Length: 141
Image (tube, rainbow, N blue to C red; front, side, top):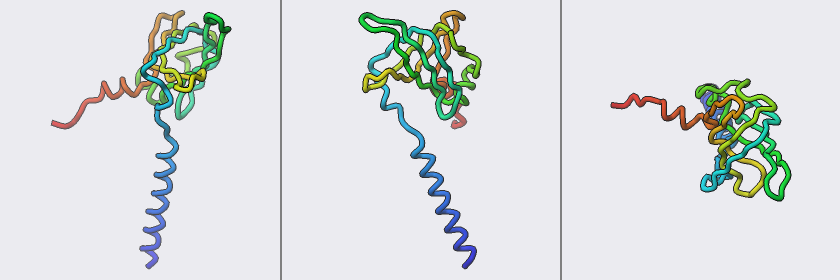
């Protein structure tokens, strides 16, 4: 009887933890992949944090608008490390060109596709996941 109750409690606890993990992840549906946007500007902050690294870029002034601050979402630090990033890849003050998918609602946010460090002449893949999948080898015959 005790063994059955412990097993039931363990299964219930695993289901709760599993549901919490699934609900914590969000999709990229908020980004409009049909309207690529190139952000040119200066890095104001780089947050190397889970679940997604965040880059704050002050976009150059455009016609009729002054400089604007954009929040650019990236992949996780783990995924980005696998494709060549580190917490020191980007520094405050770096001049960047960021290829993005902007927010569907028009706010100053975007999903990062690639980032070019203008002052260093280096281009990095932001998402990491596509490059990781491309490099994976199947073990199936």
